[in-house]
Image (cartoon, one colour):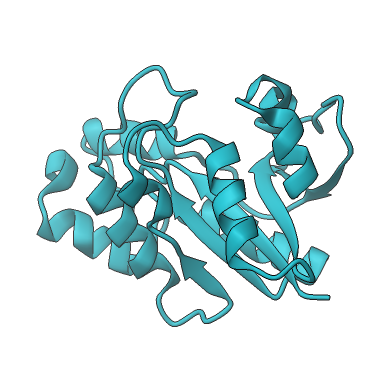
Amino acid sequence: MKKVALFGGTFDPVHIGHLLMARTAMETMKFDKVIFIPSCVPPHKKSAPLFSAEDRLKMVELATAGMPEFEVSDFEIKKGGRSYTVDTARYFRGLFPSSVKLFFVVGGDAINQINTWQDSAEIKKICAFVSVNRPGYPRGAAKLRYRAITMSGIDMSSTEIRKRILSGKSIQYLVPDRVLSYIREHHLYKI
């Protein structure tokens, strides 16, 4: 049976922690592929992403270039509006034959919120959940069955990267070189 992981997020910006998270999930769970799905308008965020949806999509494409085990989908961006996981899960369930098992990869901080997501009961029927925990963060205690794995390495967030950019600090080594070049070339965050 093929196993495909869906990895949604704002990716504002995508960073090496996202790539490490996807790689850890892939190797631990033996996924055939991981599909990165940048959101258009994330329903759980209080403020709009700083990068446009198109810029975030392009940066994820650049970050995963040359990695055939990683794909990038523009489904949520093309759909527009709020990006609800249930819509994404339905879409991908329709793309793959029933013999393909779908998983949804989330961070350890998000696993506790799944029951608050729109139509969470339906999502749980479509996808199995994998929670990737960062070092130093407690494992989630969600009231659902999921596989928890811990990745080794670095502790970072897009929020921290945005703060570094806005305060004039370097983000070199925190994002893939292609993403850093894109940010500079397009004068995003004025670096």
